[in-house]
Amino acid sequence: MAITMMALSLVYYLRSVFSLRPSEIGIGTSVSTFSYLVGCLSLGGVVRRMKPRHAVMLALLGMCAMLLVFVKAEKLAIAYIGLALYGVFMSMLWPSIEAWFSRGKEGEALNKVSNSFNFSWSFASGIANLLAGVLVEQSVSLSFWVGIGMLFSVCLYVTLFAYFVPGMRAMTSEDVSIHQEKTDDHSTPLRFFCWVGIVLVYTGMSVVQNIFPLYAQDVLHVSESVTGMLLLLRGVMTCFTFVFLARTHFWQFSRKTILFTQLAFALLCFWGAMIRSVFWFAGFFLFFGVDFAFGYSLSMFHGVAGCVERSRRMAIHEILLTVGQITGSILGGYIYQNQSFSRILTLYGVSALVVVGLESLIKSGKTLR
Image 1 (cartoon, helix red, strand yellow):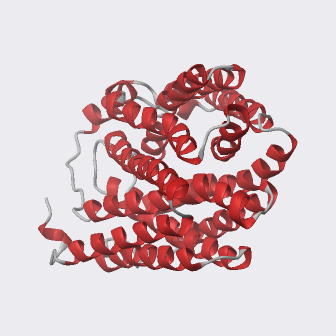
Image 2: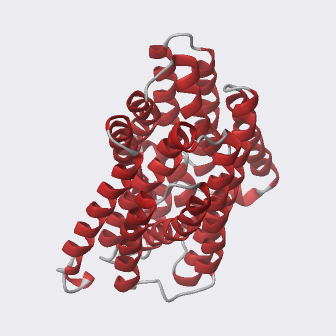
């Protein structure tokens, strides 16, 4: 909730406090995303040698500290340094959590725990979008102060649970666990298709999260709270879809489902490019929420299914979604400033169609290695 709330508030903060243009805001919102990517690429070995709870606690404390630097910064360069280090600390958070809850689980158990996790963060994300819109109307910095308090509270929560729950204290690092268990790798090659899909849906997510609020303010002339409500609709639909995926199995190891999810993304982009009213955007956000949940779950599940080094695979998952975020945000901001919002969605829709066409030429996911 804290992370999503601050990500949305960042768009308004950079425009209000530093008077940045849309293309510059696209770059600004990508600072922490890019440093997150760098952290995932370079800190994997460090995370694997740490106990999961230690990595999570260090990440949360570091994120709190860097957000304080950002909010207190009077110069843009200092603010960017704070955002960059915030992203680095966050790169220790998600791969650690995802490898932690998935350790030793396969099949139904893996599906249940991964989609329970997905429901948790997506539910909080949906609420955060609405809350951020309300807080920003009061003050552009208020969301950041509330978010810092939330992150610190989570750190205390993990610390207390580790004290009272022996199983948390006994959890070893991934390197130690792999050395002790000595299991074989049985990864599915379908993960490569899913990884392409996670890049696609996150280019769309970056547009929805970072560019649409500007479009809603400039062209649709709606308030921040209305924008937050639209984003909440997306989040609610994503939550319901994660619950559905946790209770079904047809999508697991299904190449057709993977390709259909990417095709649906393309069609949604083309539809969104034609919309000119808040009412129809509500429908767009609902359907995008479904497609996003499928793309995310497909990547997470097939990325770790049968895998031994799960933090490494989760790092790949996080790296690729981050590539989608950076590409969508920077390119989307540039196109929005120089052309239009509909042109962004059209370009991403065409790109997705090309990707689906190329993937369809591969006769079977089993031929991949």
